[in-house]
Image (cartoon, rainbow, N blue to C red; front, top):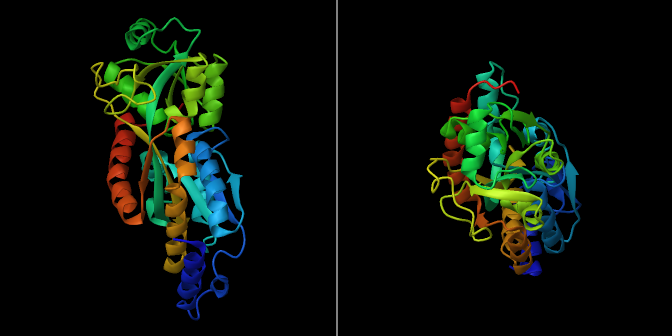
Length: 326
C-alpha cells in the first residue's frame, strides 16, 4: 500500500464515522502517536518497539514517541494504556506477561486492575526464543552443573527477573519446578535491570529473550546453557533446548501491539495497515534479525486467536507457580 492509498483510505474511513467522537474529525493520524513501553529500556518490548517506531514514522508521516512507564513487571504501563483515551494516539507495546496479570490478582484475592478485555490486540511482531544464561564468571559450564549445585545448595544461587510473575520469572519458575530445585529470586522492574543484575553478578542466573541477551553472550559476559524453544535457536545452534536435556518446559517471549478498548474500528484498521507495512519491511526484518529474535508477524485476526490460546498457557503457569511473595 503506497502513501496515496494510505491517506485516501484514512479519509474515507474517518468520513464514515459521521457524528463520531471529536478526534475523528481529522484524518488519523494528525499528530504524534505514543507507544507505551511498560518496562525499563533494554527489555524485549523496548528493543522491538524502537526499530518498529523508526520504520513506522515515514509511513504514517507523524512522530512515534516511546514513553516508558515501568513497574510491577509491566502491569503499571498496561494499566495506564488501558485507561488512556481510546483514540489511537496511545498504544501499548507489551509481551507475553500481559496475559497473566488478572490471574495473579485473583491468586492473591485482589480485584483485577485490568483484564485482557480492556485491550484490542492489533499485531504480533515477534515470537522470541528464550535462553537460560549464567554469568560467565560462574563455574557452570552446562545445565547439569547448575542443577547439581542448586540441589546441593537450595536457595543459594540467585536468579534475576523482570518482576514477580513477569515474562522472565514465569519460565524460570517452570524450569525450577521441572528440575526440582530452588533458587533465590531477585525481582527487578524490567528485563533491562534484570540483565544489569546478572552482568554485575548480583544474580547468577537469568531466563532472557535471546534478543536482549545476545550481545552479552557474544561478548563472553554471559554463558547460554539451554533454550526454552521447541528446537534450537538459529542464532545459538550449539545451545540445547530444555526438552533435549530432559525438562518438559517450553516458553516464548512474544511482543505485540495493543489499543485501549473502545478505539474506533476505523482507527484500528488504519493502525493495522500501517503496522503490517512497517513490520514486513526489509528494514524492520533486518533489525529483528540483528537482535537474534524471530519475526513472527500476525495481523489482528490471527493474533487475537493466538492470544486467546496463549493466555490459557500463561494463566496455567501462574496457577502452577502459586503464591510467591518474592
